[in-house]
Every structure is written in structure tokens, then in C-alpha cells.
Amino acid sequence: MYMNSKKRPYRVILTRENQLSLHLIREELKSRKFFGALQDMGLDDCYFQPHLDTLILQSLNMDDDTDETFDAYYEIMERRSKKIDIDNDSIMRQALKAYKELLDQKRRHAIKKGR
Image (tube, rainbow, N blue to C red; front, side, top):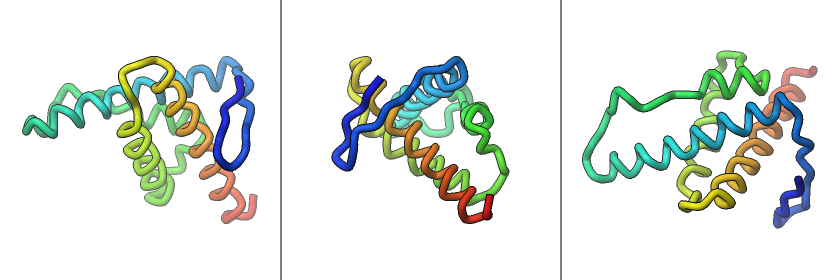
């Protein structure tokens, strides 16, 4: 699967592992969009909101429990969830972009740690 980017096109080879990650990211983006709309209507702190953060970070081998990693993850997911529209192409496009950004963050973090 190819994604076009303003910077450069990139290819995502779909494996069993990244299909799981992409599916979790898609669901998290949809959930954030839905609960964000509820919050805009004044319905805050819903107990039933799913949190897939730990599963997503584990599926990407990014579960290092640092604030830096979680802050980057949170910012990416919040930004991408606000950009989705109510169609599968839009959701998948944002999920792929979030996936790529998370992998880029993982690489930057590894370089910083000297791995």
C-alpha cells in the first residue's frame, strides 16, 4: 500500500503485526473523534471511553513508560483524530499517517538513546 505525502511517498508493507497496529490506531482515532464530539456538547469524562493507548504502544514496541513517548503518542493521535471524516478512506489515511509518525518517533527515540 502506498501513501502520498507532501514530503515523499512511502510504502507500508502489510504484515500481521502492523495490521493489528493499524486496526488499533483506526479504532482509537474513531473513538477519539466520537468522544471529542461528545465533549464539545458538554458530556465530559465518559467512563465508557475505550483507551487503546497501551495496546497500540505495545504493538509498536514503544511501551517504554516514558513521558516523552506518551506525550508524542498523545499529540499524534489527537491531531490525527481531528482530521478524520466519516468515510473509510479518510480514517485509513489518517491511521497510516499516525502509524508512520509513531514509527518515526520510535526511530528518533532510539537514536537519542544510542540504539
